[in-house]
Length: 477
Image 1 (cartoon, rainbow, N blue to C red):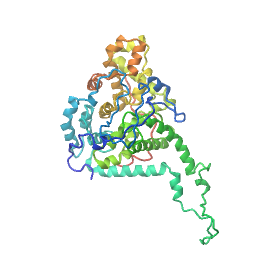
Image 2 (cartoon, rainbow, N blue to C red):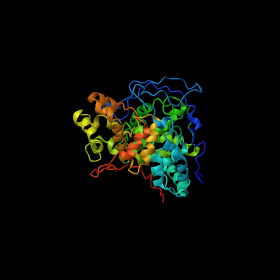
Image 3 (cartoon, rainbow, N blue to C red):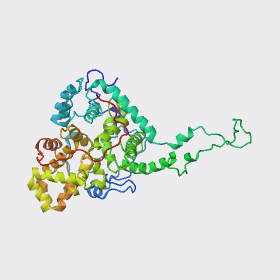
Image 4 (cartoon, rainbow, N blue to C red):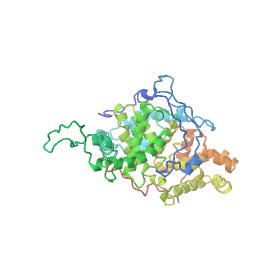
């Protein structure tokens, strides 16, 4: 059914899907303040992310859903226009590596048993421009959502998508729908079922546990009101997620549906992992996954983007979830320890720059790299460039977290000249408003030039186990 026979990168797959060219206009009035934070009850931005925020007060102009302007673009003007910027290779002219990877990628995906190590090498150098369904498939393979054996794909996809729908129906509650489907006894009906004709309207007797004002903790309404607090925070953050991209922003049916799917993913994660819950910034992690999967050129895969994104989101977050837990900040797996790893990595690769930043200027990684690491660079680059960077993160043999630190170190090394000439204020501004250098060169430095010290005991697994309620129990062997 899905992907049977030899895999071919068709013209349709190598092009941006047609339905991306007719987005509804944006009507978002909130500025993008940067994502981050650790609380789910206040709805306020985490102070560190506010300090790092680079977007300013950008308001996207609004239009009505009735506009059918064929000139509407997927991307609004970049709100970071005040920053010095060079176009990313990933969003402009394709890089040589990505151009050359097309035939190699097609060859790898044509095999009956996918060689994941070979696929990693191809992905780390960049997937072909407008990779479409190829990128979605590659990411699912690299994240372990699909096994290497193509013959198992149909069964695994069916099982995991069915499991997600079951999980969603059990945990995302709609009490008005559930109570309306109950068979309530009528107050004007006798015990033997005969109607009492008294001229009064029929009334439903609602069980106490199903009443909206019920205080019973097991009540569906009680659970619904608890969830609504988390949902409100998620919705606020989703409104700030890429407000310059019509796929996510605005009040069109299309963008509302996309935000609803991402809300479901984040709410399910929070309910399955109450010790962690939902934390601001998780919306930025789920956005690239959902975008790539929902714009798959295969319509069946695109229709199941929500289920696929949930599984891959949990997998991706499993290595770094401790970064979202303030109580673990000082633990060996906490964000402060990871920031210390970045400092040690820079010192090992460019001690002069390290001394200038941390000893002379007192510019610590906490001042600029907190968001880089926690949000996997999703706010430092244009969205299409983020997809290219994630190709390298997911395809890295070092693992996502180590490769992310390599990229962060390369960002510092590639801005070496400006940083050495700058003082505290200039360098802090440069790093909090990072101007993209040539992206492919940056990734090449991260991949090939950054050297990890032999004494660096990098920790690649989180101390906090994530629950998916058995979602990954399907065999992939």
